[in-house]
Image 1: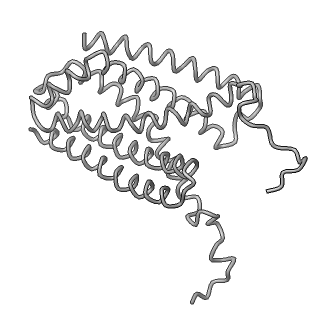
Image 2: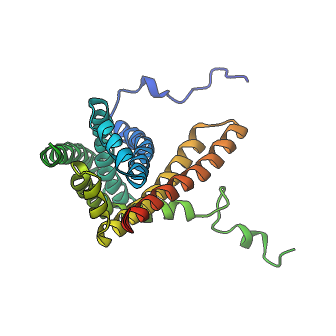
Image 3: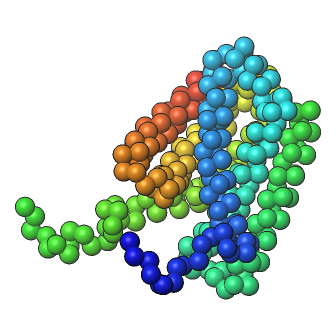
Length: 129
Length: 126
């Protein structure tokens, strides 16, 4: 195909990363992460339905440091996807498109994700520990 | 043979031939999942340190079981819709795309059924 001297649209990698693009792809990454999370949720539920031995084994696995790492990733993904999803719903009804608002809502999503994740783990470890 | 005009047959359907159905279902489940996700996190706290007997007792509460079932149905459906878009966006080989989309549809449904069955079994006492 003859490219000639025609201009190409800029490629992703020559852009300086911007908050908007990073949050956008993070929404998709966390969505895929939560899809993996449905496997772990179903595993836990099936184990509980199978009986005390399978349940105790699964609780033990989820309580190892690797289990905690996966659960931490799941919780961050859940809260980020939830907060940024609400941001998307506002866009869907036509609100919040001013550049200044887009950046303010973006930083708010990050702050809310951090606060919710921290609070969830403080409460969760307080209950389980 | 249809009596509808060519325009009438395609109006509102767009290039994906399913109109706004996918988009709307994704938003509907998203709205439902806002309160359901917070309730799910609360349940996780309750189940976190629970032994099996306590887990069965908790799930025996109809409010817990029904809320969890709603979370599973809305969440797994939302997951299926989202993963479908991801596959459609990045897998360009027609055969691989079809296999993945069929696998996603069947797999997510089977996973959802398994999760729903487990909740029901626990809720009815096992």
